[in-house]
Image 1 (cartoon, one colour):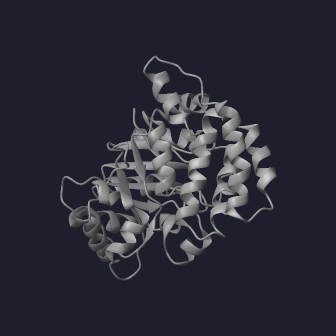
Image 2: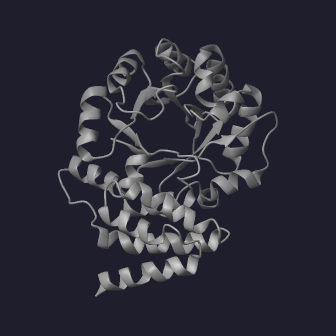
Length: 320
């Protein structure tokens, strides 16, 4: 079983990867997509999206971080992938799943699912452009407007040389609306020879068990579920190992939240730090009612120090 932390644009950055991999259970991470247009990007862009490249492509807990690229120009993507590898990327992932209207208008992400031949060309160019020992993988949805090309796209990815495909079990048109169609992942897994990773609506141990049963996949990718339930990967891993554990309680998570906000406030302009915390609390409240209480307490506050002063007594109370 492999559990992968999903890329989430504007949310799962290096800091969140550091937190979630340090908690445990995550075997691999994928960066937010790096947009590639008609020229190879400079190294500073890769270091901005993946500072882990300074640490042999791993978080400090040793979890490898795959570099994800998004674009539609096969040759430029291949050159960009090679640069990423030279900078230390342990693997390259190609994004055919992003549902963003802006991205799709610029011929990136899930809109490419209308063109299996182009997907094949992209994967083939990247596979041939990087050393043979570097894994090349892809993420796809079930389609753009419908699922009619789901198998065509999956075959295109496999036949072009990818070693793995992660399938988000919805179309672009379906967005993130439930349910995720795990039975379609099963169809793709049964058709392909390469590894298939299941993704979509895995927010609890029970979801994982149902997804694995329906899709038949041993490996899963989780994004929103881990943002709401930070030790979900560890709970799943321990359950699979026969050592069930209780999820982290709010009092255990509070110091993690405090440190997250401290680091965020150091790294970002003052006006952005509070927004990042509020963004995470919106996910956490799905698992922790206390997150809603904290969110309500800081909702209208923009001063980082004022927010820090609200959180600090909560942590001290927990410690005592």
